[in-house]
Length: 274
Length: 49
Image 1 (tube, rainbow over the protein chains, first blue to last red):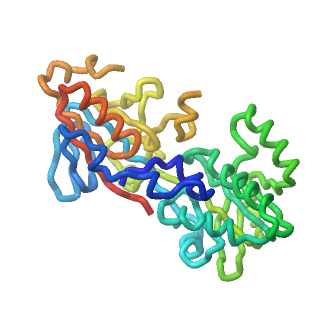
Image 2: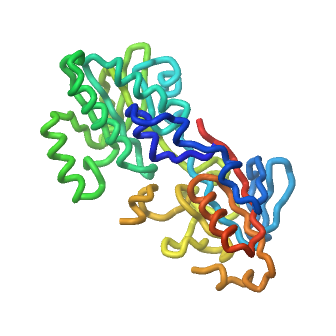
């Protein structure tokens, strides 16, 4: 499936169906294009070729790498188990878990609602917060929801990286009485005890119970780039491109697009168009 | 940077391999297809959890 991922915030918020955010690749593929449904196993940019998992190789005149990134739920202890077992735990970032969000919002009847923002770089840095404001809007209007506390735990030292928006968001944080914990990174979820544990800047652990937990997963380059030895990527595993031309820093016939690249913007279209 | 600045512009029908079929990969494929003169191959690996 090809997904329009920005819609998942609204799928989690109950305004769209997940099915409406995706189309089979075959519907979108240009008729003239050849489609290989298998993974790349390695890149040989010096020889203008890639090797597929089947062992076959493909030569090219130009290569465009638009491979995306990896959601690393496993990087948070217990997160996968919680997402699979605990109806109170959800995550808009994955088609496997986004369908849990709206039911979790609707079953919340008060208590503590916890939202997380992981270490950068990540895809859209607005999304971890958008779902909090959407949920808050739903809960405020629902008379069956009792007293509740919103809590936003973020890796960042600020509510949002762009000062212009941070100013407005801080007003909302105050008016909605959000418990804003800066430089708090989710490291463990114990769903049997409904506990979320965060590492603070000083290394100390802060833990809180939750009645609702939205997880934004840790994010990293795909394994093929983390282990890449072809000079396609920088030390962190992002495809190194010129940020103006998207042309590769070493191989002139290689280009990188989107989340897999080294460009220093947030990995969202809004950051590029601003 | 335009592809025409590369040596491949001399190739009659340049072969472009695109890795990924998300927003970036599919829009690149669509634009090259519209231009008409490219041999396009898309490699898709689905990694959604």
